[in-house]
Amino acid sequence: MSIALINSIATLHKIFCANRRQLSKTATTLRKKRIKQSFHTPVLLDETIEGLNLQKHSNPIVLDMTFGAGGHSKEILIRHKNCHVIALDRDIKAHNIAKDLAQEFRKRVTPLLGKFSEVDHLLKSHGYSESSLDGVIIDAGCSSMQFDEAERGFSLSKDGPLDMRMDGTRNSSQVTAADVVNYLSLKDLTEIIGKYGQERYPEKIAQSIVENRPFSRTKQLAEAIGNAFSISNHMIRMDAIGRRCHSATKTFMALRIFVNDELNELHTGIEMAEKFLKNDGRLATITFHSLEHKIVRKLLNKRGGDGHSPWHPDKEDYAKPFLSELETNPRSRSAFLRVATRTRKT
Ligand SMILES: C[S@@+](CC[C@H](N)C(=O)[O-])C[C@H]1O[C@@H](n2cnc3c(N)ncnc32)[C@H](O)[C@@H]1O
Image (tube, protein in one colour):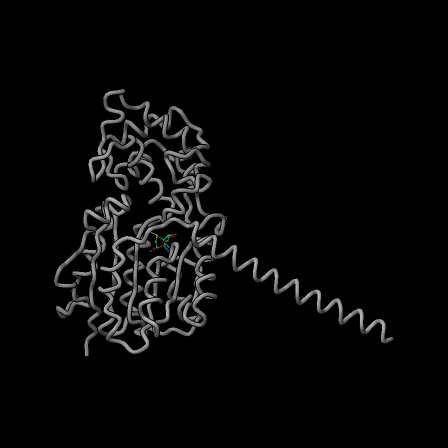
C-alpha cells in the first residue's frame, strides 16, 4: 500500500470519527428535546415513590411496567441513587424515551419493549428471576403523548385515523378501532360500549355506528355518536370534576380498552408483580376508572385456600390527587393509587 493511500485512509478515518461525534451530539440534543416535548405529567408522583419505600433496600430493583414518558422512573432514579429501573412499555415511542433515559443514567436502566403479558419471558431473558424485584409500578391506561398525537387515533378532539393501538404497528395482526366499529355486529358493539364504556345508552350509540359506517377518522365517529343524541342530551355530560364532556367520550374509552385488551392485561400485570416481587417488595398501582379499580381491589384482597394472602394492602388503602394536582393536571382527576406489600409464605 502506498504512503499516499495510507494517508488518505487516515484522513477519511478522522473525518468519519469527527462526523460520528457530531452525529452522536446531535442525537443526544434531539433526544433531550424529545424528552422535554413529551408532555406527560406523572400522576401522584410523590405518593407513588414514597409508597414503594425503596430506602429500606440497599440496591433496589424497580420494574416500571408503564414507563410512558418516564416521569415516575426518572424521579426514582434521581431520588434513589442506587436504584436500577427496568422500564417496560408496549409503545415504541415510550420505549425510545426509555432508551434515552438509559443513556442518561448509565447502567441504571433496562428498557424493555412489550406488554404485561410478555413480561415473564422478557424479564427472564434479561436474567431476572422470580422473587427478585423490590418494587413494581403500574400506572394504567394511556399517556398524554398517546392522547395528544392525533395520528394515534385516541383523541376525540383532534381528528386522526381510527387506530387506538398502543403497540402502534408493532403487531400487524392487532385490530384497530376502525376494524371494531366497521365489522362487529350491533350486538357486539352494544356489549363493548356498555361493558367497557359503562355507557348508559350503548344500544343507541351502536345503532348509530352501524347505520353510519364505514368510519376511518375519529371526528367522523364522534359526530355519528353525537348525532345519536338530541341537542339537549348531547353536551350535558359532566366528568369527575364537573366539566362538560362529549357524548362520545365513554365510547372512545370502551374502544380503546377493547383494542388493547386493557383489562386482561391489567390482571396479568398484577399477577406478574406477584410472581416477580420479593417478600416485602411493594406494588403501586394507579388506576383511572371503576373497572380497573375493581380488578386491582379484587386481586390485592385475594386469599389462597389456606387463608394466606399474597398481598398486604397499605393501611391507608388508597390515595387520590389533592386539589392542587387536579388544577395543574386535570388528567389526574379520576386517579386512585393503591400500594400493597408482597407477603410470601415462609
Ligand atoms: C399512564 S401512561 C404512564 C405514564 C408514566 N408513568 C409517566 O409518568 O410518564 C401508561 C403507559 O403504559 C403503557 N401501557 C399500557 N398498558 C400496557 C401494557 N399492557 N403493557 C405495557 N405497557 C402498557 C402505555 O403505552 C403508556 O405509555
